[in-house]
Image (tube, rainbow, N blue to C red; front, side, top):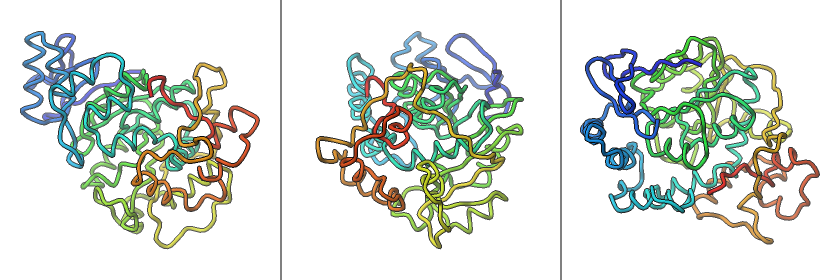
Length: 365
């Protein structure tokens, strides 16, 4: 699969200028650990380029691992913490603590366990099968990992370089990863149909029509699935949430309560839409629902017990995460983590995965 990376400054297709550099003819862009940094942010870009020109990959990596987005609730990690994070022997959770992810680290560490994650998987089951998937705002690669376990080809795009670094080094994501700002441009081009996926992130964009234009450019005749978009009814305050009606004005597709996708995953009756949902989603180019065995029937992935399920109790990572889980699971009938504690798990591996007794956690979780 061929992809052309696009300069965020002049819109030109980037070409290789050595193993660690890309150029648009005017500006040089750094590539560290195989992940291009295409965020137009000075002086960070130039500092990373200078370090690479001096042969100091470690210093270039330090610069990029300290970068954040505008909604980060914590300060950037210092040099000592970054050097420890890039050393051997740390788990994903320990590394996110060192990189000062704060509550975002809890979200990423336990995202597999959330009902919103299953809603995203169900959305992907309603897009054309076998198409490669470009996930925008992919975070540390939860969905990319799940897709690759089923044999799908993937591309991940995110504005924060450290998240992509975690995706590669801890979640073992193999597809192309690109650090860039979809709000400023489409980041890459392809001539073939793709499923474009953006989940639990669209509300962070201030210029939503612009972002949708860029996402649609990536489709090339495939589908666009935009899920778990917080509305103003949500208790989640970050980003630029809008009303259901505002989101409906952005698309001709059916804008559904996010719970439609979560309950669809569990095979539950979907019910009528609510008047003020806390999150919504839609699919442009939707197909008939076709279940996927995400549990990896080949056995190449070693599924792990849901880490929330302790011995007769729920092990919440934080009270804030527990509150968010409660909001997201409110519409589930008897299938929240509270209910799973007191039920025998289903017989098949696929059903244990679908009901969240088993999770596809990375080895160094």
